[in-house]
Length: 300
Image 1 (cartoon, rainbow, N blue to C red):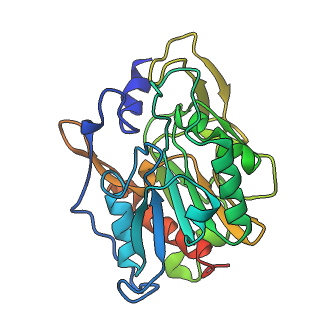
Image 2: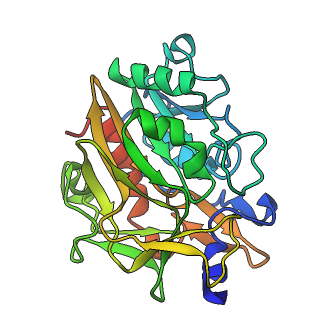
């Protein structure tokens, strides 16, 4: 299983978060920003649930891409209630975990049932949610939110069984044609997307797919995060999803099964790029902007 362990390194560090830092030199600027600088609506990024990706850490460049498009970004440090969500229009939740989670089964939820219910009511009333849930233990930690929106998240690792980059293309059919991949014009069209691991899920509701797995991926279910053996349980990932979007009441939801694809990070002693700063992932920033534009109602 040595190849799998090497592959898993760029996800989020099993042995210490210091191995991953934001690549502050990465700078993606859209040709035509959606809003004048600092004049757009505020996109809040959850920082109240022991999130591995926050604006001050690994999602620094996530925030910078949005800023370059005219949006404002801010951290949200409050638990989810009707009152705390009332003045928020856009919310990003990236890789939440429970305070006492030691990354082994059983995985505790990062959110109370009451928080998940408040979040669903907020979306139904017009809120826009971008939910990003990476590999184990994050799917288990997000189970209450997933249940609220009728999505079955597999608390494991989606592992690519081939060599090379995890790149999805329109030609393969795995990167699906939709308003999010077509954009509003040719300059916003996305033809390839590269990911860096994550998990897999299956919506039990109406939805539109963005990326769908085939049997080149397996979902592995270790009992302890990052620890695999020949007896680790797995299923083929064919038919499961990496990312989808849907409307819920008056609101909108996008779910992604991996976080690094929307970051720009440097990992390990060699400070190897992974995320939007990886040359193979050159279309990832445009997909991020298309997602935000759809959540903003600018893309339909």
